[in-house]
Length: 297
Ligand SMILES: [Zn+2]
Image 1 (cartoon, rainbow, N blue to C red):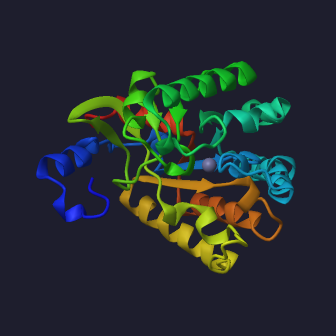
Image 2: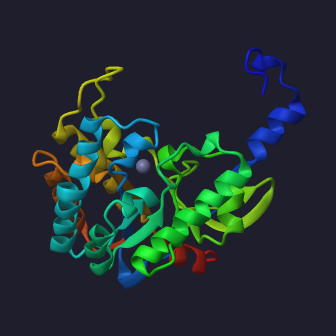
């Protein structure tokens, strides 16, 4: 793209850019396991200290904030999930796991999924193809070595994808990606016009706790959204997904949602979901598997 004068970008170039990664067919199954009315796919990005380090910084205070995510945030999240009998997916940067591999045990032990989330929460779009491929492989291997399970899914840190990310996810055999936002419902990733067989479980900023609750001092960002308002937004997203018989997908961070004044949001959301009717609280891997196997209805 012509960064200075984008209107001068040739048709062939902007078409090629747009076609690098597109949404293919929607993967909307006619039914959910156990007669559930909708799927609830909760994800927790356990960035911890790498939220700071992946940005190339190591401020002591910010690292402590990440440490809180592991010490207090994750246990609180696990407690809520256990209370509701809900399984979920934790996306873990390799370095966040390596800092304390034992902390992954309670997550895996409770039946939750661990997915790839970068090596050190680096911005993927800054990498060349070879480096990106190497880091993706190393991150997957490191998580497998720590948990004994080969991760099935990938989420780009900061949802920041390079021109190669989707193709690499397919090439390295991941069943799904969860970093893009071209639909409310899962779809097949299409790279350069070719269907990949990779399921995209779409995310969105509107269903991300950090958007509303992450504080940044420098540069100063908007004030926190009241927890009640965050719950209201998430509940409306769930209600609409339930009414549509589709997928409610949510992204939370243990170092954001795991505070005493906020963890209730997750608890209340799951109570609300169960009260509305039968829902399938699943991992992203289980969801990808189900929608792919039922892709023709
Ligand atoms: Zn992250």
